Image (tube, rainbow, N blue to C red; front, side):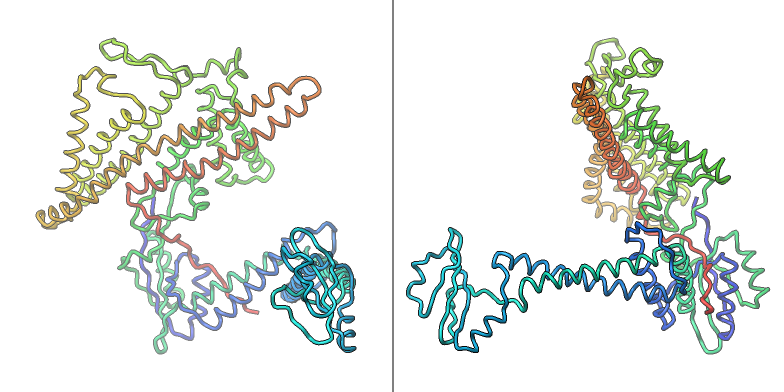
Amino acid sequence: MIAEMKNVSMVVQTKDKELTLDALAELGLVHLEDFQYSSPEVDDALARKNRAEAAYNFLISLKNKNDLTSPSVEVSEAIEEVLKIKDDLQAAMEQEAALEKQIAGLEKWGDFNPADFNFLANKGYYLKIYTFPGGKSDDINDLEGYVVILEENKKELIFAHLTREPVKLDDHEEFKLPQQSLSAMRAEKNELEAKIAELTGKVQQYHGLGPALHAHLEELDSNLQYWIAKANTVDEGNLTAIVGYLPADEAEAVQNWARQNSVALAITEPETLESVPTLIRNPRWLQIVEPVFKFMGTVPGYKELDISLVFLCFFTIFFAMIIGDAAYGSIFFLAGLGLVIYYGKSKKEKPPLAVVLFTILGLATVIWGSMTGSWFGSPELIKGTILEKLVIRQLTEGFSFHTPAGEFYKVLSGQDVIMLLCFTIAIVHLTIAQVWNFLRALAHRSLQALGQVGWMLINFGLFYLVLDMVARFNLDQALGAGGLVTDMSLNIIIIGLALIVLFGSQRPRGNFFKGLLGGLGDLPSTVLGSISAFGDIISYVRLFAMGLAGAEIARAFNNMAGDLLSGNTFIFGVLILLIGHAFNLVLCSLGVLVHGIRLKMLEFSGRLGIQWSGQEYNPFRFRRDFI
């Protein structure tokens, strides 16, 4: 859940500002307001951090094959030396690349000395070389002076033109003389290669400073954050104001700290919600979903909803259905379980949340894959084993559907059943969002709660249309209702639209007729929203589609390898299976990122009005660099 936050304002004497910030960093409870102010100290700290970061990234990009001892120098000196080598190395590599390009362009001309052309000019002979695309030797017979054909082919004519006076042939492309000969260029390139090797060896001597440089980077970042915090204090005469936010249940601790440090303190309700940070507090078992949010870089706004529980439940289902294969799930599960045991027994600490999450996701995939009988895309692998008894035949072979009166309706294949299951998950998932909105509006005693009922009715009306149009499953015929379900679906859609128009734009304690006018004005967008809701339900078919695609790719690789798994080609068949299933596992995992997360972040979150525009609660814990 999202913790309640309070606004905290502190006033101290300006001469005590830095000491107060030091004490505040030790307290580690207040998230300081960032007014985007800067200062010379901030600029200096940022420059130092950027230089250290550039040096560190350059070092870790090198492939150090030798176990070299790092020189005994200060980290700050090493940074400057590494950056100097980096600049020299980059300049040498750019010069080598330019020379290599020149050499490639001159190799067809052979080796010659450009100074010879100047020697001839000093003697009164002017020699130039031209290229004539598509030209023939007959085309240049009328030129004055001496003409020597150097090369003639279908693409171009290359010739030398020798005259006693300077002449320029504008109709032909003149060959630009290089500054030095080809052999001189090659010699210079060799020198540059030797210089690059020397610089590379020299910088590799600093490779062992990587850990120390990384630690130094953390210190520089802490230093930068300190000076940013100081720049964002507000000075007025001899007094300084420090503004921030803290969790409501930490107010007493901050009050005690203020008394001990002679700080004037005021704790109030936040006036504007835009800058209030978000602190999510969940039990350990629910925190396992946090790595997904961190990976996406999403934080709900302070007054938005924490959907961690719903996200975890449905993301687990989405993951299992998209991966779809019990063998793939076993890989995730066993790898995660191994890491859990490793952290517990070897490191004597709790495993990272991401490890626990992947263990659970892997187990869920094993369960779903066992229900559908998919093991490496081959149901034959489990024939005659106890795993075959875990398969739910309706999900693989389908069944004949009869009306409540016992009349035959149609035969549903296994794929039909899974598609119907996807749309059922869709209506449940989206209805949870609408019920959540209903309860929030009801808590505020707002008539908008009835508008949310309208959206729920529209969802169920559209659900009938999706089943009929996409899944080819007509509820009227399936239930033997004789058109009753069709009429009910259309009616509840109309009733839903009416409820949204009447109550969707109402405000707490607002004028009803004014809200009604607002609803009428929003009618076009409401209709468009209904169409979008239709698409939202259909979009859950991606769970079926991605699972089917993964299964078909697995079968394709199995078929490719099948004929090779005997005789001398056995090793090639094994390689095809290993590479093919590894490739398919990566594709399925990407499908989870693209499609599984999308259903949560767009369709579901969109229904709840979550914009993920919040900033994470980050209490001030940084110390300045006293050196």
